Image (cartoon, rainbow, N blue to C red; front, side, top):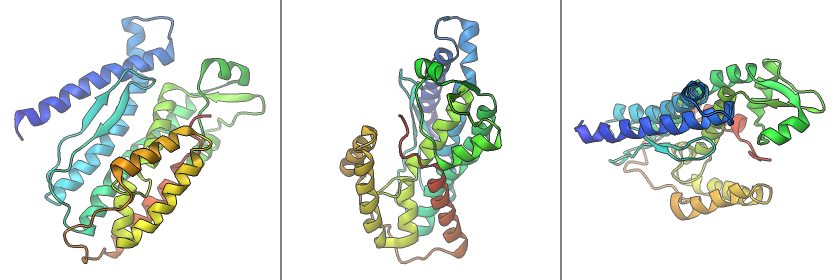
Length: 276
């Protein structure tokens, strides 16, 4: 690889490590800005970047296995609540058939999910149960996916009436990781879920993508973010998935099973109302 092909990704990673660690510091102790307090922000930034980075590297290595040209992950630093807009890779050569489409589309969410699951479980175990009044003053109310509810009960952090679970920064990083997994697995267009759905169903993918697009607009009545996301999908991502060069090559049984597993992960991680 040419030097510039890994220089920019490394620089962006370092800057994003700083912005996400700063965001973690503000979660841990917003009233005290110091180097010792800054390092406590690693409890948020390192697990978050591990999840996001593993997701994109999953795509990268899957693409390489099919001799598809792809860039290294580009992290996007941004001074926000979590310090980043995520990470992306760019595919620079066509995907030839549905087998490669499924492998590349599935590898990212599957690897990212494999890291997000234990990180979330550990983060939940470190989280505190606090009175609802305190949580309302000091935090943002997050929605629950089916998987998150299961994990909360497994680690013994179910809050009784009048109390809420205040997430540890690692738990918040895991929550974001699971949410990002579900966002990427939305079965529309050129999202990861759209790749997987097209690999499984071919041209039939479009009708199911339209159905889910309408569902996003409906969910936008309860959280405006879904409506904004639906607009981005319509104008940027598109509803219809482009046809690979050799669409007639069918998936083998193992890949079909992997596609079904991806649909199951999406159902478990999807959060209809992410922010209350």
